[in-house]
Structures are given as structure tokens and as C-alpha cells.
Image 1 (cartoon, rainbow, N blue to C red):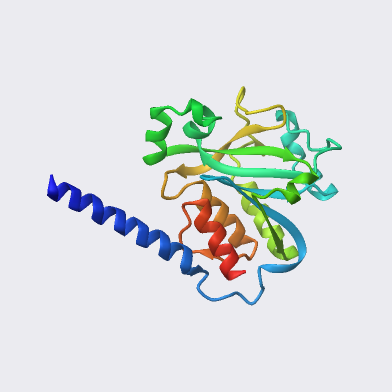
Image 2 (tube, rainbow, N blue to C red):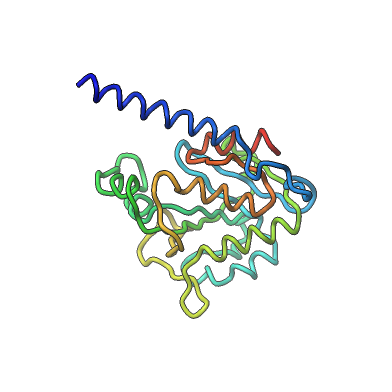
Length: 222
């Protein structure tokens, strides 16, 4: 028993050190010639205790670019919609756990092992700018375009169109879509968000499995 406790404590220490290093070591290690923050486009990093999303301003160009989401219930031209909110995650956990009260063992097990992935898309109004969980990030036009391409390539497509998941959603404004890549807890939703931000020119931590470590690294290096 003592040996088992020792191994458990050693594992916890290793995870803590890895997460600290993942937050404090920047990626890329040296700042690129094109700074990630600056004039161009404003996006928002949205965070809750376990998950992050990216909010993109709904300009006319963005409404046109993501018009293929409309057939799945994303009313991208709704006059009250100011932001397109996109996040990536594990299929089982995302679809089957809309609230913590509905948490079940099977989705947790899949999240800790390997699961298929989905993209969650929602709309938000202008009040999002003042939400305490929203962090404003200004990126260059070139970085903004790279991030959009990264997001677009995360959708599984059939004949060029995104593949929606029928009957999946939390409210009247959102939808789920099949996504590329496999999900697990070590390389999950927050590492996808970090990758999208790096495409925009934003430096993140080396490894950010939690929203708190991602937010810390974004604050430290941008």
C-alpha cells in the first residue's frame, strides 16, 4: 500500500511540474517577427473551469464565410448576433454532458482515454465583450486569416459542406458538427484553442490542458 501511495504521489508531482512548465515555457519559444497582438481584428478567449472557446466578431465577411453553418440552425445573420463562438472537444463528453448534473461515467472514461471529436458552434451578443470570462485579444489581419483557416479545416466536410450532428445542441442558437482529430484529456479542447491562437500569432504555453494555464500563458507572453 505504501508503495502504491508513493507511485501516486510521484505521478501527481510529475503532472503538476508538467503543467507548470507547460504554462511557463512559451510556444513558440521566441517571439515571431509578426507580433500576435496588435491592430487588425479583435477576438475573445472564453473560459469556464474546464473548457475554452474562441469568439469571432460577426462582420459581413465572416457571415458570408461561415454561411454554410446556417442550414444547421446557426442563424448567423440574426440581428442580435455579434459573435460566432467555436470550440472543439470530445464527442461523448460534449454531447452527453450539457450540465454537471448530467455527468455520467462513460463520457468521463472516453475523455480520459481516446474519443472522437466534435466542434460546438454558438452565437453571442455584444454583451460578451464585458463578460468576466472573456479575454480580449487583438491579432493582425494575417494572423486572423490563418486562425480562420485552421478553424475551417477542423470541420469534417462532405462535398465541401460541414457535417452537422442531428438533434445535438444545448439551446436554440447552437449546433454540433463532426470534427477532425481525436480527443483525449492530455490533448483536448484547450490545446485545440491554444493551437488556433498560435495560428493567429498569439504565443501560448508549451502545453495547456486547462483553461487556467492557457489564460496564464496568454497573459504572460502577449
